[in-house]
Every structure is written in C-alpha cells, then in structure tokens.
Amino acid sequence: QVQLVESGGGLVQHGGSLRLSCVVSGSISSISARGWYRQAPGKQRELVASIFGGFITIYADSVKGRFTISRDNAKNTVYLQMNSLKPEDTAVYYCAASRSSVPGATPDYWGQGTQVTVSS
Image (cartoon, rainbow, N blue to C red; front, side, top):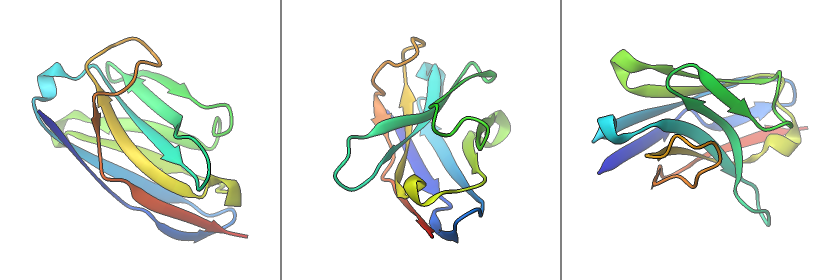
C-alpha cells in the first residue's frame, strides 16, 4: 500500500503563489508516476501535472508556464509550485500515485486533498 499526505493549500490573492507538498510513504518502489489533480465545485477531477521517473513531466494546458511539478527523492515528496494563480485555479487539489508508467493512466492511490482558493 501507498499513503499520500498533502499540505500547503490555502487562500491566496489573484497573481499570488502557493507550493503544495505531498509526502509519499509505503510501497514506494511500486510507484512509477506521481501527479497532482484538482476538482472544482461542479466539475470533474482533472489532471494538473504528472512526473515520471523523476524528470518527465506533463502539464494541463491551463497551467503550463505557471505551475511546476518536482520531486525530492530523499524526502519522498512531490511538490507543485503554483505561480500567477487565477480564480479559476480554485479547487481541491489531490496528490496521486500510479503503478503504471503510461501517461494518463488512472492513479492507484490518492491523498485526502487540500483546498486552494484564489480570490479575485
């Protein structure tokens, strides 16, 4: 089993920045990909960014150039640096992990979520 614990959400003004963190524990060796998803009220959960093998990254078009996903292997932590935040970025952000290395594969493990609210 794999456990994911997010932190770093909160309230920020339009144009501000936040950094989300996700500590991964458990059967880490089984994990091929880590990522961040978000779900806004009334909308489906969507992929924000994924990282494979430590350096291959994928981003949703809506966050390219503003968000950066990274990982620290020594700390078993995945980060999402979010800059130039917009009100439409408001959502619950979920950390996720997948045993599959195929981009777009449905994650096998999820964190509990952390709320990000961007005020206009």
